[in-house]
Image (cartoon, rainbow, N blue to C red; front, side):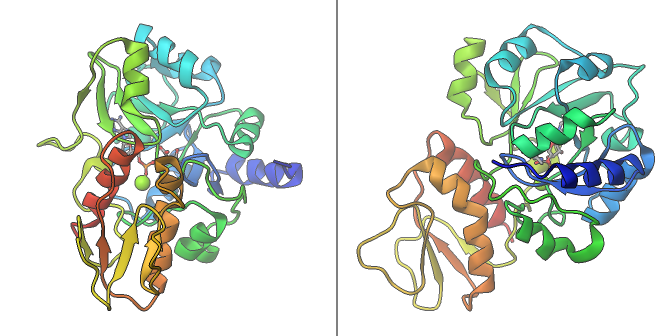
Length: 310
Ligand code: TXA
Ligand code: MG
């Protein structure tokens, strides 16, 4: 991908003043601000209409700055070596001396960190003197943005700059793993659990629907397209949008497909953009046919279940 360096410079300038910009990542677009600046972090919450208690993920270029902010451990290094930069977020202990704004964590002593792979995000990070905090660039509880146009749709002119990095190649958020004690998955996402288990060499616990919400991506109402969703539908009514994992032979006007032939990676990539497309269509409900529940299919089903709690 050709990177427009003038735009990266502009983004840096805006971030340096404590304002926000939208940045493409390989998972979804992020709404970024200086993670060391109270002003910038407060603005992120305001723009997203995000509840204060929902902490932000902080994005780093490499380990140099992270070492100053968090305690790193053996599992972290193993996973970092294998998957970073990439679609995985680690929850670590925050160091007392860290410069991370208290607004990022809402005063908690853990921090979620990630190393995005998208060349624009990486290039921008390499020019900054701080890591950036970035939640997904959508209004709180709505569908995440996977293109510059999606971000514009939610925020219009409220964000001074949206860096355009094309459509996000993974299309769903990062997998979140808490590494403070025994590894626990807090959110299913763009990296399969089986790939993580291979590196940690243990079966990993999941805690994606806890009694007390540790990670509000876990909260029931999330990723909502604003339309009722019916899951595991066997038949699609005429006036419903039908969502299928793959293209079927008898194409009907109200049928929408996540992939050509059932590839789960392609389906994840197209999930949010297809939901946005349906939202703009005339259909007022969505009927989702069965999606295989393995690999990335698990993350897709997780998002659809939460979206269906509308
Ligand atoms: O792929 C991604 O992770 C994207 C891109 C932009 O990097 N970001 C993203 O951020 O999905 P957001 O804010 O939409 O989701 C972050 C999730 C939230 O559910 C939040 O509660 C959780 O991470 N989180 C943040 N800090 C945490 C912490 N210290 N402990 C547990 N969960 C945390
Ligand atoms: Mg989000």
